[in-house]
Image 1 (cartoon, rainbow, N blue to C red):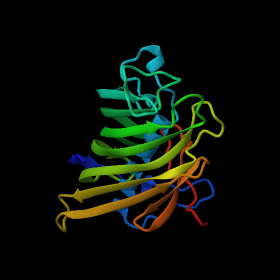
Image 2 (tube, one colour):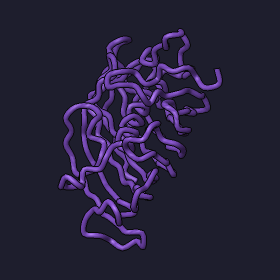
Image 3 (cartoon, helix red, strand yellow):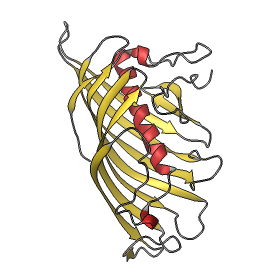
Length: 249
């Protein structure tokens, strides 16, 4: 697993703004709240990737889905195709390809309300269950996050060093075009570490442990350092995905 660190300035707990009925997500530590916003942004990108169509049929080299989030990005991608017996194939075949192992390393800009950042991410993933007229696909794998030039304008700037990683376990997703289109089951476990420097009291370090569970609707339940919140998977580009009512309320 790769580990990457970079300088980060992200916002206060105000980034997790109240939803329309006035209920705010209950994240008691402001630095953890900042990390949770970054993690939620990564989750939306993952959901976009998992629910998108493949581009291989159009002759796109490494036609991995997921280009619809954020603005222009750059990086590298590779894909290897396997049939149901585990034999490597020369290319993607909609009828006989049973699984794809892909690697992605890229940068993109992100903007959500008054928060913005330059984000670098990697994914080393396998998607299975593809052979024939499949109804669902299953994603497993790992990845890393690095966030730089991140800035929140509502409550002043804070500077951090940040690195994180995630493990995706048996996330089952309907094929593109299905209704509903949200992940049906599975989990994503994410860890992040942030050190804030230059404060009057010296450096401050926080860690985030987030386990996200899918159940087929447009919200995912996230347990963040023991606190429970819902993430809106349908949040459009630029919206804060953590406006939802905390789970159990």
